[in-house]
Image 1 (cartoon, one colour):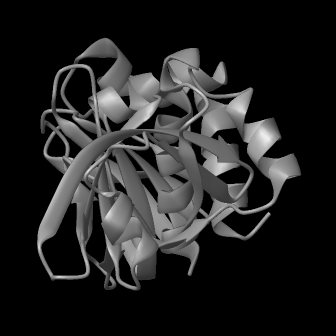
Image 2 (tube, rainbow, N blue to C red):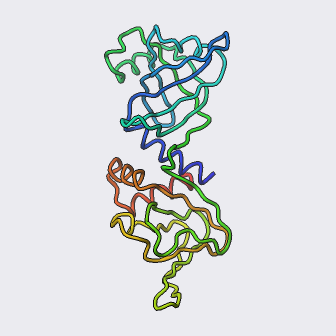
Image 3 (cartoon, rainbow, N blue to C red):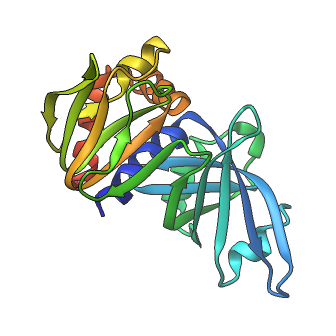
Length: 233
């Protein structure tokens, strides 16, 4: 559950930066339908505004799964999601939603609440790993390409100097590492090993930059936010 909550936290950052999803569903005849739709996130809810003549209307009104992709400005997929769509029927909610969506949709748009059962980042933006005792998470001299956060367990930091390894630190759950080389574009200056069973999440260079830019947090605050989200806070 910790990993899933951390992944959802990052997906929400990406969702808050964009306005449109590529949504796929099937109609009553079982034929696939695909369309670009506007969306808004409101807390844990995701609302869709679908044009009245959109080919996916029939599929959304039928009983069946809905899948979607959040695609970035460079046309690369960022987030995959899945679930079911529930039409918004009451006028008060419809009026509130209409004011938050682009005017270009007009008054004929149909609004849905997307009941999510999956929400995952793509392109290796945020990954999770479970490691056994002694496993190397990063090695001294490697190219620094990810920031790591310990969700559970302990890690040991060591560096080889003059041919002899030297233990530098013990890291507990909630600690992060790898940011120095990532920010400086330098090789890893130390190795990190699991000491007992360990669970970590990591952010790619681009995901790390995106999270810092969009949240306005520094690295320590960002790591704390991810860890708190993973604990259910």
